[in-house]
Length: 176
Image (cartoon, rainbow, N blue to C red; front, side, top):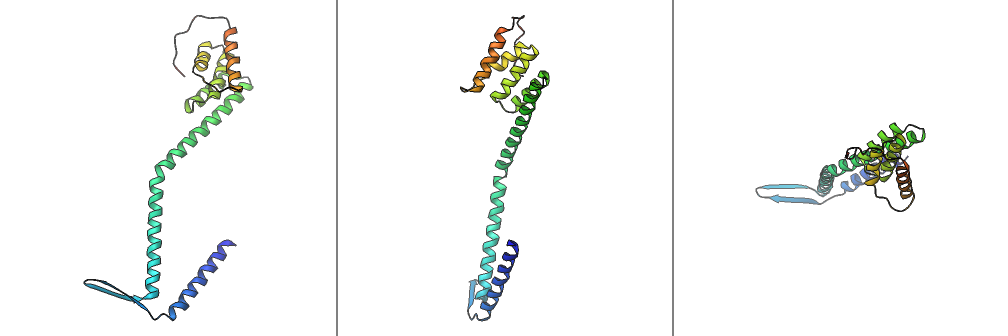
């Protein structure tokens, strides 16, 4: 309904301009030596409006083109964040369904995309469930959490790690 009203308004404006142009007695004289241009006032007004519209359109396209790298960067960051969220959700579901190896793989993937404490905690808990103390220790040592549930989960994982009997120290590994 709204586009029809805009079209009707545009036609009404065209009729009004046409009726006003019929009674126009003025003219515009533009002199740029050695040229001389004489046109009616209505034609000059319509030409100025068209020129304004063209300049506005060009500036708008230029602004869009200049902001394109920032928009693409934001889109890529959003996409990476969405993939990390998806991997983390799937890792939590896999851990809760009793698949710690798959949960660790997914949590590691989420942690590589975005270094979130929750991904590190899920990976550490999954590594503990698999009995991989070295990997769990790597995730827990590099983890900094604010007070709250994540800190409690980190402390629970550290306590579980301390309860396990010590094994031969594995060679130092870097972050997965």
